[in-house]
Length: 537
Image (tube, rainbow, N blue to C red):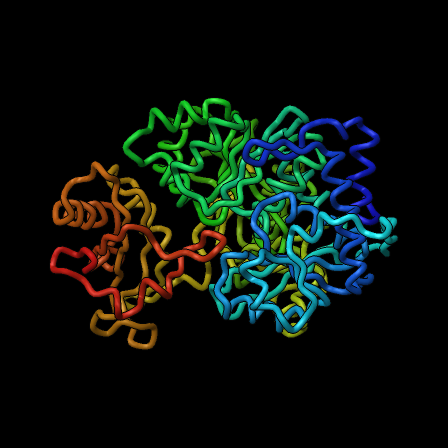
């Protein structure tokens, strides 16, 4: 589907008779598809009045609101490029995005205006003004940039992934239709905010493409707030990351949570692997299937996922159409696959040792680095040709940085991020393997494992070291000293000695990025001093 994305979405609403259907529920207000597209047209007129033209960039730092959607649609309508960033970020982080993106204008809340004085600044309220005229959608060439979203910055400075006007149609086909089977009667609710990839699809583009509705919730997420939103708006689909599912289902009132979310038919999880034990708990409390999946800022949304018709606990899921993946080891390509392929033929090719281009290949079931290719893979990292070349090959394959294997049924299994690997006793260790064992204890809500920087001989060069576990415990878990001893014992039963954590540190919550990923570097900081029982001081 080509053309200006704002025009494509408005045309769909007209063609399928959705203009009067609810699109966004925000507090006590409900906005129809038609009202939202009209707001986008007005916003385009206001943005044009401050000099925004095709190809210019507009930085948007607004909470989930009609103003956010209007700013996005207005920018797209002008053929300009929306740069999406979280309004909750620090002044330093906003300054970085401002300098990196070099926008022609900024749209933000009143409290953020002083941060962006170097360019014309509008507030969300300004976009509701009646402009002198409503500009027609600007025709855009195939492959034109539409919006930029920044990576979480866990491996360096955040990078702006540039996406096209056509990209949301691709990941809508994959996740909304292929994995969830979304229909006009669905109401989606995402605890991940719309300025970030997961929330942008779930909250904005999925309902606009399928004629459904979603919840616009401007507040910072809390369990109590999420329950109140669910009671009011009765969502059928929930989107968030494992840490928020853990908070929802591990509180003191699981019955209240289940009653509030009784309207759900499915829950989708991404951001980090979902521990099987947490998945079981989610389904028990929410009363619906939870679908683990894998996506990235560079792809725009989810490209591997369990689906409402095909799922397997402990696996990330299957490759979603229209994407294809490759699993590459040192000897070549271990697996190449796409939805609907002949699995027997793929298995035979792997057994024969053949991969792409005739390279030597590992067999199905052997792990390697994950690559993905598809129509929504980013154009580039904004202004970073070297980093783009490192991640994105000339053949369109994106290196994700994940270590996986694919089983004979086509399910993708995650072994962790390649950069998270550590060396202990001279051997490479994947923290996710240890985390999955510790996560089997009923007293564990969340867990992260890293190399213990305080251990003698720690570090790759020394080949020694040890592991340290950081745990968020359930409210009804045993006392800290007892739980720490039980976790060490559990690891010792299931794992070789060098994979058994030397220490267990208990935390109220794990440090995370704005997109929900654990900040492992923060866990290793010296200021995390420990008591004798392993708990934080």
